[in-house]
Length: 247
Image 1: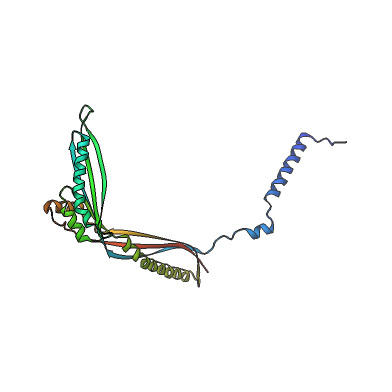
Image 2: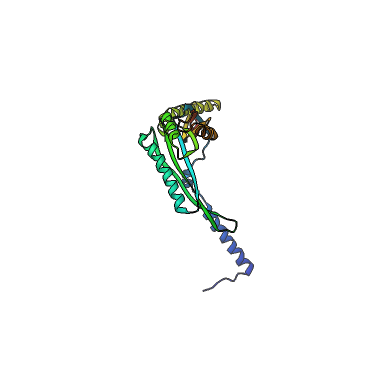
């Protein structure tokens, strides 16, 4: 079979031309493929709106704690146990679900070291937490405990109260989102809009918290008496964010 002879430069040119043709074939797009290509979003606006409601806090949490020291770890642990048992003996008979609840908190036991790096003794801390919606009774029971002192105290919004308000605040936020979307669409000269995507988030923001030092001073000044308390407020907030396509 006769094979024509091509100079080296001609052969290289042929190969380059073939490669170019192959590349062109690879990037060619048919009309059908163009028809299936996704449409680039146009006239899309991102916006958000919030609803909120301020309500009295209805949940009081009091953390009682004590610290013990000694040369023996077992002795310190037993002292903590006695203190916690005495506190629970006072608080547990008053337990009513959601109204007054009692639980133990952290219990820590750790060594103390001397200047030469050896263990010179042991120190421990234990907690009992009294909390609930019956604020008067929570403060009264906490005041009767003598083996532990108040280490912190704070008000918050109970889960039940927050959930009851959330639906109202959410409806408020959605209505504000719709009103703002309509206003924006009209401002740009469109008569309507469609919702592309949306997200809803909520938050419970406390206001005017009870200072911790006030709670500690109240306990020290009036042993075996109810701790003076004053609830603040919390703001339940719901935010609706999303994107609309103006039409």
